[in-house]
Image (cartoon, rainbow over all chains, first blue to last red):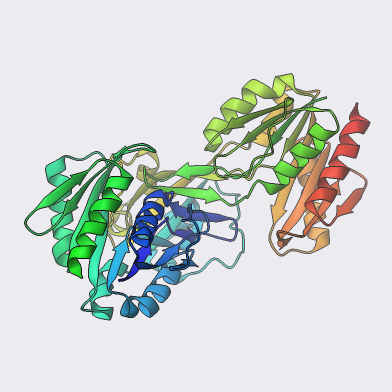
Length: 228
Length: 228
């Protein structure tokens, strides 16, 4: 099958020297990609410069992107041509709009004035004791996937931090429905390390549990083969 | 001589999944360190997980840090024991204090109330259309170095973006004086690439020009030998 995988974390520039980055090593995406390739599938991996990459393979294409706007563009182009999307990338929820000194913000009568501004400087000044950064929500790319390709099998990811299993699975089911996904891999940052990676593969009426990145990849492979 | 080198860029956490990161590959710090080691000096390199590292060497110690607070702690401990500091790390000017939705900030009578808050959530909610992040200035570590060790030879760095040579050298001279540095390496982001790295090594009454990272390292080595 032709499978699109995303991995790594996006970075949103504040100015030319600083970014807000979502942490993600890309290790899970690498293992998933290698597992799919070994099983004979064709993979296009959308990832970042910083993320660890799978080893080269004749059936593997890698596309590097930086921020959510790049990702949106590439996904919009690609999603149409794939049968499955495994969207494991940590995508930034917000992107910087404008940064300025606290005094100016405190003195303003209506803060909406800052939402239409852009920093003219290439490197924001560091004179103020306190600065204020306004950020606006990025489009939720996962929610657009089925519009672009109604027949794609969509596997999404949900990362929470230090929550109960019930809460995590509940949130995953909400995401499943909202994004018309086939499966959501739900995980908790406190249960992820280099060696371990606890995850719930959540479907409408059932879920499976994995405890390592390799197990997640193997279970996803099984699911994908069943879609064929 | 015993030389302390810093390289890479610090990251300041917004929450457990996002950080503000100052971009720096660590390549210049790596080349400087390797040049100093080859000339027989003893080097302690303070750097980050993401930065490229020099090859192992019996006279090299590497300490990894993450944010400005870590760096301050390590430098305070170490600066005393070194004769030279080459401070090439891109240190974050600001660190996140509190992030909240725009509506709440817009409704506030006095924005200073947000400066004493902390996010209780481990992952800041992504419900608001617009968010506001308050950041406070970090201590300028370079300005503290001579307090910790008045006899250290201090080599600082100044990075600006798309400015004239005169402006860049002027700002470097201000930094020289303010921080009681012996030399400031002044560079412009628009003149830095993988192959090229234009820099001015600015002293009180003179400056030298380098066009690659290797040239910067060689000129710094010459200067340091002259301090001995």
